[in-house]
Amino acid sequence: MTLDVLDVIVSLILLFLGIYCFLTRSNIIKLIIGIQILTNAVNLSFISTGWTFQNENTVQTLVIIILLIDVIITAVAMAIMAVGYKHGATLDIREFSKLKW
Amino acid sequence: MVLNWVLLILVLVFTSLAIGLQDLLFAALSLAVSSLFLSIVFFLRNAPIAGVFELSICAGLIPVLLIAGGTAFREIKEKPRVSSYLLYIGMGIGFLIIAFLVIGSIGEVFGGAYKLSFISFEKIGSLGTMLWESRGSDLLGQLAVLWAGTLGVLVFLRKTKEEKKNDS
Image 1 (cartoon, chains in turn cyan, green):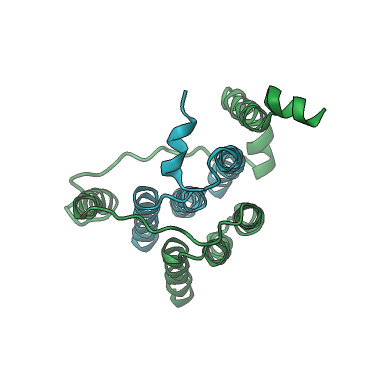
Image 2: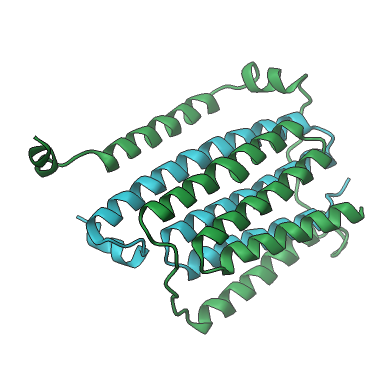
């Protein structure tokens, strides 16, 4: 029983697009978008695995948990964004180094 | 099969747009459209509840938060950042290595030389049973993450002593 290769290739490309976004962008909103893309890649691979092994319930549970944690990450990132903007009036992550202790 | 291809290509196109567009409003909207197509893929893979969650959270809630954040802080355009060529070369090499390993492990590309042993799933009734009755210590971990997230937001958004004085 093998996975759908197309799904795996697309999730790999999504994974690398997310990493690319993380490494090349400096705006914090773009970084949150990068996290979303990484999450989408992982979710697609999970759903594809569940489809292949005919056990969708397990992977749906995992995907729901991942999405829940994803929302928490976004909320915390938005809070960091608010603090950074308050101190530096910018959303550029390079300016956030001024926030360190 | 054709629908599958079209949907996955659309997911990739809109994801690329979300990364490439400098206008943050359109980038967030592209991410929403990409998640919308991904949720249709989930529905086709017999995972409707995951599809609904993907649709409501990744295509609904998070783009709204991003757009609200971007407009509230009046930073709609992204400032470009110069990256070195070494980064792209390293990423390309990393992509090739992982792609060969993954595709070789799941397919018959290398004669199954790198075949991974997948976790054997045990079928457990319905999704409700799976979510509420078949989980153990991971619930504690999830609660810890929720608690840490709530605390994180509270700590980041608390008022300093000076701000409290200014308010009063």
